Length: 313
Image (cartoon, rainbow, N blue to C red):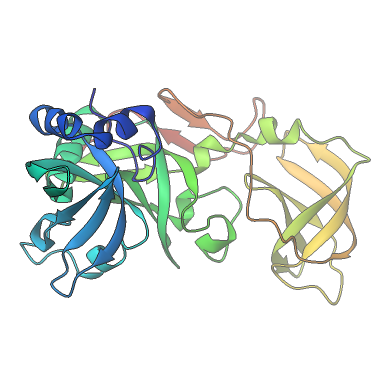
C-alpha cells in the first residue's frame, strides 16, 4: 500500500527499512512505485540531494527534488532546506552492484503521486496528520504528505486569539488538522485546526469553581484581562497593574456560566515563563467531521460554527 504521510513518518517503519536494505528490495519499490524515505546528507553545488538509503547512497537530481522546480514556481530553498532531514522519494533507477550502486531517486514524483491521491481522496471534515514546517505571522505552513505544503491561517488555529502562530506551534511539531476545503483547480487543500481542540463545554468540564490554575494573558482591556486557560477556552479577570500580554499567571476560578460562555477569574500572581513547548489536548484525532458548534446547548450566544459540507472549490 502506498502511504502519503508528512515526511519523516515512514523512515523508521519496518516496511521502509526492509525496502531500503537490499538491491532486490529497491527494485521492487521501483516496480511498484512505492514511496520510501531516507535522510538527506548533503546538497551539491548543483543542488542535487545526496540521500542515505539504508546502506546505500542515492541521488535526487535538482529537477526531481521538488514539484515546481522545473517550472520555476518553487524556490531553491525548498531543496537546500532538506539537508539533515528525512525526504520522501520514489526509486527511478537501480544500476550497478552492491559495491558500486547508482541509485537515482525522485521526490517530485512522490509529491505528484501524493498530490493526485490527496486531491481525489480528501473531503471537507476529514482529520489528517500534518507536520509544521514554517511559521509566519499570518499562519502556519504544514506538510500534509511527502512534503506537500498547506497552510492553517492564524484565525483557524484556536478559539483563543494569539499574536502569532509561534504561541501555539513549533517547527517540526506533529499535529492534526481538518480539511476545510479542496481547491482542485489550484490543486490546494485548505485546513483548519481549532475544531480539534474541543468545544466550550468540553474544555470547561476540566474546571470547577474554586480551583486555581495557570494561564496566559491574551488581551488587556479597560474592562478586564483575558486569560487563556486552554487553547479553546479563556476567562476574564479584573484589571491588575504590572501585567502584559503573554504573561503567565495563576488564576482563581470564581465561576462558570455556560449560558453566556463566561469564565470569571481572579489573578493571583504572575508566574515565570513555562519552559516546556506548547501543548494541548486533542478531542478528535481521526475520522470526518460534518458540523462543529463551539457554544454549549442552551447558550444565549450564537458561538462559532463550522459547516463541513462539501466546500470543494
